[in-house]
Image 1 (cartoon, rainbow, N blue to C red):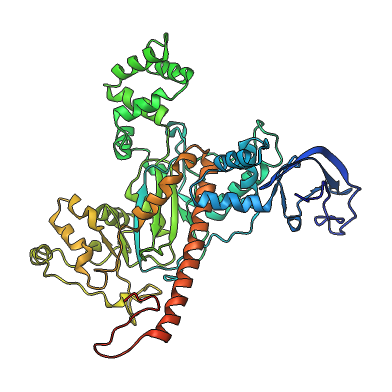
Image 2: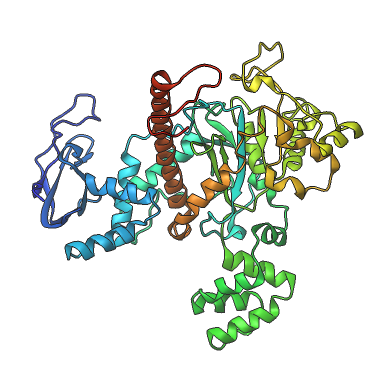
Length: 528
């Protein structure tokens, strides 16, 4: 709590003008600023800025070497508090709960939760983070990936408000989009609360990019063709999202009376009476599919979840791509991601393998992405299907263990193979009625059987689900920024963990491994 109470920028020269003129004398902004730290709140802090006499650029206090982060010249966070908030978010504790705990501990009134939350985002946006999204085991180009959708990872969105673009090919500048999200987070420190931020990033079919690490993607131009989903009916979206009528009514009951009344008017229902009367009328009217769809779009008003691609290394898995869907899931989401990769994985594991293979191959008919056999492990003959059903068919992919010398066009950087397969995860093999899909089973491949954890995405989602209570209540741009940031720090932790594990194993192996027939191998702790 010994921070200085007079905060001046150390800059004395303008870094924008060519001749670097001297800045004007410091001007007081306020003497009522507050420094918020783990120990409490320091009141009556003075903040100052300097002005360039030529370009009129404002240079304000932003000296991290003091252990402080200036948000808006009125609220200044200690770096320790920023890092503490980061660790808590990694452990699924929202910023507001952290501040509630600190207030109870210090018996001091902190600034509003929203202000501290935006100040923390301001800190993360100004932090030099690489967002590489890769695994220490797989590098930047994993040969085997697992893909799935987290349907409950959503933000509030009225899909009906999105306008379908004209003359748009679905290509997005990934760096441009994410830089604009960063600018929104940073600009919140320059506009008073409650005023419109001109740098806000609303969801749009023409500007809504996924995140793929810069070493993994082909270029800064990536695909997002969700605007082509517009033809899918909203009732189909409701079905895919698994929203029952009862669940929709529960969400309806949480809305304000004005929202329910407005919805009744939109559905040509009497809008007079209590909330209970309005919901009762809507419930009767929702027996009509048209009204149900309208209530779904208006009240559920949520995005389509997270499409995620991970590598399958057991506990030490890493996220490679994440996409924040505006509409309900379809194979198009994962096709967009895979077609944006520099080296498409040789083996993809997905719930709807056949649909993904068919859709992606239709997108690129002149150079089929999934081949041979449309991504199946063997030619779909009756003999092969029967052998797969009996468990007698084995398809070896030796290049998964040792890189092959390939003469084929466009081989994978790690395996040397240009073959690309789409397989079902173990728990969804029985979802298909097509007998040919038995040739998409993981257990047919000896190199995958036993070690491939096809449930890594579910494990990741089970972990992230604990954060839904605060992620799902954020605005779209805040949601995607926070999700990407949490996932980055998660990946970084996984890499540190796997690196230490590999180092420990290497040391133990050199010191304790006994080589020889019939000898026993025990670790220093006695574990065989």
